[in-house]
Length: 204
Image (cartoon, rainbow, N blue to C red; front, top):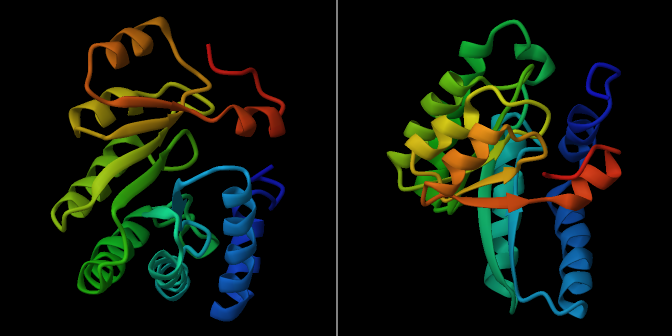
C-alpha cells in the first residue's frame, strides 16, 4: 500500500491540506460517535502531518477539543509515523526535525501526553526509535509504541527496555516476543480492527 502511494502518505496529503477548522469539525463528529457508543476515554494520535507545521496543527486541535469535551482524552505525538517523501533518503535529517523543531514546541505548549514511533521494516528501526523516544522522555512524554505489526525486528525488546507504557498492534509475534512481553511491565495492546481492514492474520 505504502509503495503505491497509499496508506499513511495519502492521509498526510489530506491532513496537510485541511484547515484547523476542518480538522476540529471532523474530530468533533468522531467524538460524538464514540461517545454515543459508550466510550468515555480515548487516545488521539498525531502522525498524519509529518511536518513541523502539520504535526503541531493536529496536536493543537486535539488540545482544543480535550479542553471542550466531556471525554477523557489523551494526546500522543506520532511524528515518527513514517518518513515524509522529502526525507526518504535522509532519515537523520527528519529525526533532527522531530527532536529540534517539534518536541520543543510540544513541551512549551503542553501538546502531548505520550510519544509514539512506528518501529517497522521500511519505517523506523529500533535504534531510531530509541533516539526519538529518549528525546521525548526528556520532556516528560511517556512512550506508547507501534510495534510488530508486519515483522519482528527487535522493536519489542527495545520498547520494554525504554519502559514503554504499551506496545500497540502486535500482529506479528514470535514465541520469544510473547515471553519477553509477559515478563515485562509493558502493556500489550491489540488492534484487531487494523488487522481486519488490512486483511492480515489476527494477533496470536
